[in-house]
Every structure is written in C-alpha cells, then in structure tokens.
Image 1: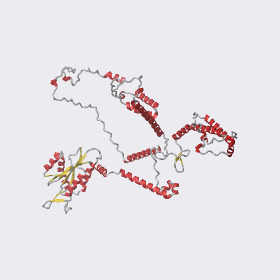
Image 2: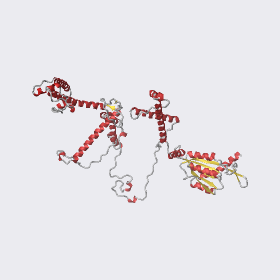
Image 3: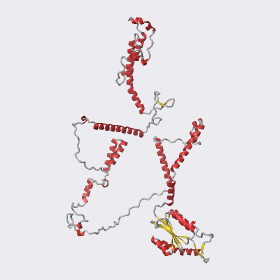
Image 4: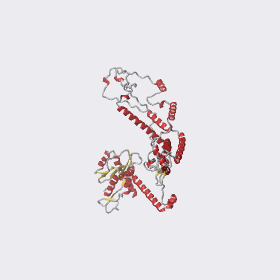
Length: 582
C-alpha cells in the first residue's frame, strides 16, 4: 500500500505502542493490533449486510473497476502495522460492494427520473427564487423562462402524442433516406443479391382515371380514424355503405355508371340503335340513296345559303322560373336582437378558449372606485403604491382604447369615398334612373343660373338646361333618387324665383320697356319618373337656342321630344293658376 490514503491525504501517525515495538517487529516478534482487528470485524459485518441486500436486486452485479493494487490506496490505511493487511482487504471488499450497489441503483434512479419528468411535479424554489429539485440542486432555466407548463387537457395530450408519432415517422424516413443514399453511393458488389431478380417494366401503363369520390372517401376515413380509431372507422364506413346500397335509387348512380336494374329497364323501352354506317337525318338529303355515307354526295344541293332550323315555341304547360330569393328585411328590434346574440356567442367562445388555456385570462379591471373591494388586504398594506399602480393600469386601458379607435378610423380617402357612397348610392338597388323636367320662365338672374348649374354638378346629375332667347327654359336632370330629391328641394323651395338680382329685389314681376308688368318668373316641375338608363352623357351643361324649333330638335336627337312638348304646353296651366289667384 502506498504512503498516501484515500483522497491523497497523508496516513495517520502510528500509535506510540507500534513505535515502541519497532525493534521487536524487526526481529519478527510482533504483538497483534486490537484496534485494527475491531475495525476489520466492523467492515466485515457491513459487507455481509450489503451482500444480503444485493441478493434482492433484480439486475446482475457489475464488476468493480478497482484492482487489488488500487483498493489499499483508497482504503486510507497504511501498510505498516501488524493488522494492515486484514484491514486493507476488508476495505477493498467494502468498496467493491458499494460500487456494485451504486451500479444497481443507477437504472432505478434513471427510471424514477423519467417518471418524474413525464408527470407534473411540484414547484420547489430556494431563497433566491430559483427552481430546484428534491435534492436542492438548482435547475437550468427553460426556454422562455418560468415553470414548464404541463397541460392536462385531453386535446393537448392528444396533440403531443400525435407530435411524437410524427417525430418518429420523420426520424424513420430520414434513416431510410440515409441508408438508400449509402447503398447508392457504395460501389461494393456485396450489396447486390444475385438470387433476387430485378423487376422490369413490361410496357407502357394504361391510363387509369380516379373514380369520383375516391379522395373524399379517403379524407372521411382519415377523419374517422383520427377521431374513433381504425377499427371503429371501418365499421362506420361499412355501415354507411350498406345503408346507401339499401336505399339506392335510379338517381343515386353516378354519371357514366349503370347498375343491372337500370340496364334491364333501359333495354325494355329504348328503340334499336341504327347501324354504324347509317346516315343522320340532317345528312340524308345530301346523299344519293339517303341511307349511308358511302353513297354519292349531291353537290347541286350544296349552296351558299345557310338553313336555319325553325324555332319551336315552348310547351304550353311550361312555367316561368321562380324569382330569386329576396333578402330578408329585419326590423330595428330584430337587428338589435341579432347583434346581442352574436356578441354573447363571441364572448362564450372567448371564455371557452380561456378555460382551455389557449388564451390568457384578462387582468382584473381595477379602478379607484373598486380598489378596496378588489384588493382588500393588499390595498390596506401600502395604499400609495397600490393607487399608483391602479392609475397606471387605468391610463394603459385608456391608451389601448384610443389605439383601437385610431386603428378603426378611416383614412381621408376612405372617408370621402364613404360620404360619396352614402350620398349617391342606389338605396333600392333597382338600377333605375330618376328623371325630373322643369320649366323656368326666365334665367336672366345670374345667381339663379349659377345655383342651377353648380347643384346639378355637386349632386352628380346628368342632363341639360335648354335656354331659348326671349322665351322660357327647360331643365332636364337625371340621377339617383337621393340626388334627385335634393335637387327637387332646391328648385321648388330654396330658390326665390321672384327676385330679379338687381337693387330692387322686392319687385316680383318683370317690367317691359313701356313700364307694364310682364310674366311672373316661376319654376314648375313638368314631369317626374324613372327610366331604364340615362339619355344624356357627360356633366350637366347649358345650351342656348334662338327658336323653339331648334330647341325641340335638340330633344328629338336624344328621343326626348315629348319632354319639350310637355314643358311648352304647361304654360297654359300656369296662366290659369295665376288667374285663379288674382
């Protein structure tokens, strides 16, 4: 045994008795050391106890790595002394037994560690707040920080199990690709088995069409297998197939396929098919015999004219197709009820996702008014800090609210587009064009002329204002219903047609050169209605004519001569109304 014990420490000093008896030991006459014998006996007793425990272990004992020469060094006992040899052997045997017990306990500890990692364990923290295991060792922080989230929901457990299966399949596929690449790259002839004959392609494979519904059946089978299992899925599909065959009728057979009953039924009433070479009825007149295409073609009957078939009227009993379904009109109360139901359903879905752990639960909405009710003990402990924190949360909620409003706000271009859509959209959805025809006695006032023109352009109206020199004016406007209603209010209510535009606006009648009063200026709506499409193109404009004939010709060019006739004839009704007022 070397001069140093276990761990490199110097051996303990020899007792005085051994030092005194050194000369006697040199002469071969030594006395036994009682303390060394007692220690050896204790070690042997421990060895027997460990041997009995090792017999109960299931796995075979592993051979110790220490040699007989190393064991005395680890025993920490010097070679000197009369009992040194017995003590060294006992310590060596004890170390061997301890090494075997440690090797036997290693698999059990590994399995216990695997069970602990698979099942959720309790969270243990030390004084610094770090996560530790049962023995007090600090664990490494996980990715993302915090405690590992272990979900106990079946849907999450099922997802993790499927993920493990996918990982296994991917690992197997990767190993298979590596093996194939290694075989392909290897030039060794030992990879080739001469007893196995290579399969050669006999010829070009025929075209095979996939029947309708094949991939749909595969998808259904995959969904059922994932939900109920393979055996239950096959049972469900077979039961559905049997029920379908039992309830099958003539209309359930796919196109291009006929069952035996359909073939027999069709053969009973279908006429015999013509021969393969028989001519069609529309070609029979061009053939000499009128029966087969092998006969001579009568070219004198082929001309440059095209023979059109005679159109046949539909049968008398045929009915017109039903109209398309109209959109359901809801009242204000029904619309409000539907909005409430959608909001409740959305909130229930959110609560369900929070319950499953897919969403983080919202923080409690703490305000100054409910501060003491929500945070009872915490608020009483440090009111100033709690109030500061609550005010910060209130400011954060207000800022988030403003951010959401700003995100929903429309851009200037979108706001302009929305305004135009609301002003000029067709609320009825009929697509008709609304038309108004007005007769104005005089447009000499530039204010009246400007307002008639600019309002028509701002309301996106098309049409024309025909001004007859020394006569009346005819205004025709076309557009959507909303724009026409706004223009109607302008022409009949907002403009004071009696004003002349000069200094003396109170004079309502036009004066002639001799000072007599002429006609009274007014605006009358001659005709209002709808048309399928607008008659005028482009923006609203003014046109001046010198006579009634030329003005009527302008309306006749667009097919609206009756508008001018109605405006010209309305003067008699206006005169009668004026006389009735007088």
